[in-house]
Structure formats: C-alpha cells, structure tokens
Amino acid sequence: MAAPAGCRRDGWVANRFTAGIATTPIDIRPAVLDDLPRIFAIYNREVEGGVATFDIESREPGRDDEWLTARAPYHPVTVAVADGKVVGWASIGPWSPRGAYRRTGEVSVYVDPVSRGAGIGRALLADLVGRARSLPEIHVLLARIAQPNPASVTVHEAVGFRSFGVQRRCGEKLGRILDVELFDLHLDEV
Ligand SMILES: CC(C)(COP(=O)(O)OP(=O)(O)OC[C@H]1O[C@@H](n2cnc3c(N)ncnc32)[C@H](O)[C@@H]1OP(=O)(O)O)[C@@H](O)C(=O)NCCC(=O)NCCS
Image 1 (cartoon, rainbow, N blue to C red):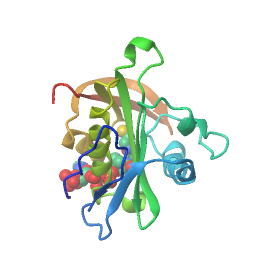
Image 2: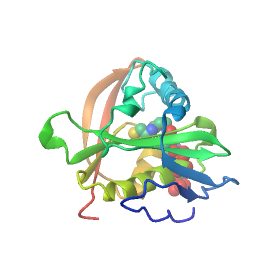
Image 3: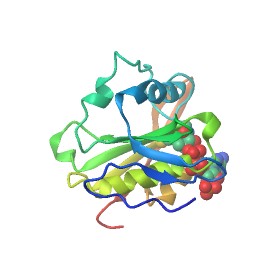
C-alpha cells in the first residue's frame, strides 16, 4: 500500500491510496450527505447480522441524517471511494457525552464485505489518525473491538493502537455473550 498523502490542517482533502490487491486507486475524503445510503448500507449489515457494532437498530437515510449533519467539527466521517462507489467508511465520534471526555474520540471503521482484505480498512484508519492529529480537541483515540475480530485488531494495531484491557461479557447479541477488547492511541505520545 502506498503511504498516505500528508493531511493538512486546513485540508480535509481527499487522500489517494493504492490499496493492497485492488487494481483501482482508492480515494479517501470527508463524507457528504449523498454518501449516507452507502455508509448506512455497509453499517446496517453489521447491525443486523454481525457483532462488530452493538447497535441493534438499523440507520435510514432521511430519518438518521443527523448522524452526519449534526456532528461536531472534530468528529469527522470519511469514505473510501473506488470507481465512484463508497466501499468503506471511518469516523471519530464521542467516547462519552460528558464534557471532560471531549479529548477522547472513539473510532469506527467499516468496509463493504466484497472489498475486504485489500488494505482499505487500514488505509481508512491511517488517514483518520492523520486527520485526528490536526484536530486540537482530540488527543486520545479509542477503539472498542468485540472479540474475536482479528482483522479489526490487525488494522488498529498497524496504525498504532495498543490493547489496554478487556471488558468481559459486557455485550449480548445474536445469542452470544461478548467480550470487548479496548485499544487506544495517544496522539501526543506516538
Ligand atoms: C475490520 C475491517 C474494517 C478491516 O477492513 P479490511 O479492508 O478488510 O482491512 P485490510 O485489508 O486493510 O486489513 C485486514 C488485515 O487483517 C488481517 N486479517 C484478516 N483476517 C484475519 C484473520 N482471520 N486473522 C488474522 N488476521 C486477519 C489481514 O491479513 C490484513 O492484515 P495485513 O494487511 O497485515 O495482511 C473489515 O473487516 C470490516 O469492515 N469488518 C466488519 C466491521 C468491523 O469489524 N469493524 C471494526 C469494528 S471495531
């Protein structure tokens, strides 16, 4: 995978990657409203049939647009686009609504199943960490990864996240009791 292009403080520009085995370049850019049907379609697969998210309610374009439009400017959403189609997305969201936690953002990353294993998840996360470095409000990134999820652990560790513990048996979905492994990345330390 080519190294991510530099991310400028004033930028929010598209970064271009040649991801893994993909033959077409992948552009990563901030999400816009028109991307929501694809973002939600990719996400809802995991809401309805997976345990990567503990959400159990699907999101709908139109009804749930505020997920994108009402975000704080320091909570970006990005999309990976190949051949004009959104094939994955990543975001930084609030870790907690309590004000003192504002310096910590929780990351999410989701790739369309047909596009997985080509480096897109890693590219999305590397780009997102680069963008986070230009956000004065955000100092710590956090990821909660329901276990087991080796692909997610691999991509988070590849961009600098480190495990700091496991919340045992805290979730229950699709008939499974789930552990969640916690990872963080301290932007001012690495
Ligand atoms: C996690 C996810 C975003 C990764 O996206 P992706 O585009 O497939 O990731 P990449 O291709 O960049 O990298 C995947 C890495 O995981 C590795 N991997 C995949 N399956 C693996 C397994 N079973 N065991 C070990 N490593 C595995 C791959 O080898 C690759 O590492 P490498 O580049 O060093 O070879 C994607 O699988 C996904 O959307 N999963 C469902 C949603 C999800 O789990 N999101 C994260 C929530 S915490």
